[in-house]
Length: 264
Image 1 (tube, helix red, strand yellow):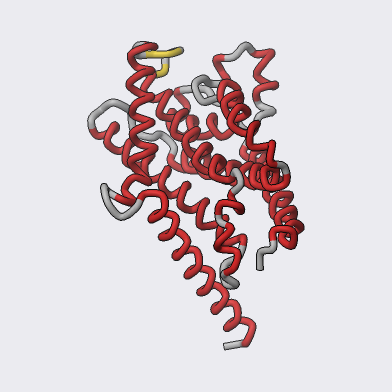
Image 2 (tube, one colour):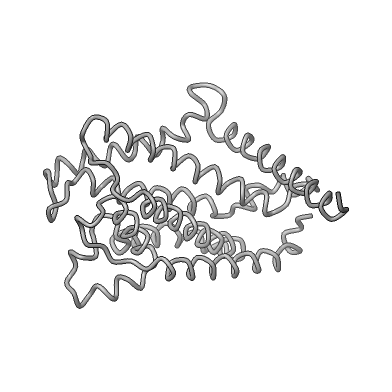
């Protein structure tokens, strides 16, 4: 085996070991060993989603623009939960994990990857469980296009990690930035497509909404769920370009600020 291949294999093995150890650490610190422990990774977003489903079903009734409220909320709130779970922990994330900076084998990438995998994996498991149960009991219809639905979910996760990097950099460099994150997150919800579809908006305002890459993720996810029965508007290359740009800027900025953070 060539030396470069052995080095790559050894590096990959260390990377997997680091991320695995950090995942276990985050689970233990966040949920502990008792009272279901890591099961709350799935239960927490699941309980919130079911609660929102019940409230909206009572307030709005059965249908909205010909779409069942239960299906509208499920396809809106679950991607929104993914967005929040990936982006919100990035506020002062490096400061919160300052003690790990002294372990020479743990890198910034390890810290970020473990957190993103934890949040993405937990929210995805919650989506699968809730959707499966609701489909089996007949509350929602089966998915029409799995490829499109999974693509929309992955795009939301990819975009959220990019925005999460921006939040991390902004809060690490400016302490006052923390005060603006939550208000901005709440203000973004009405324009994100969480509880509406682009087709329902007056035609003249649709292009404005589609400047927001989050809207494309929701539309793509719903396009996979509803299929051709409901018109959707999205462009996955647009979201992909946004996400790639944010990741490039974020990773470059983190690389530049490593020395100031005194991380080995």
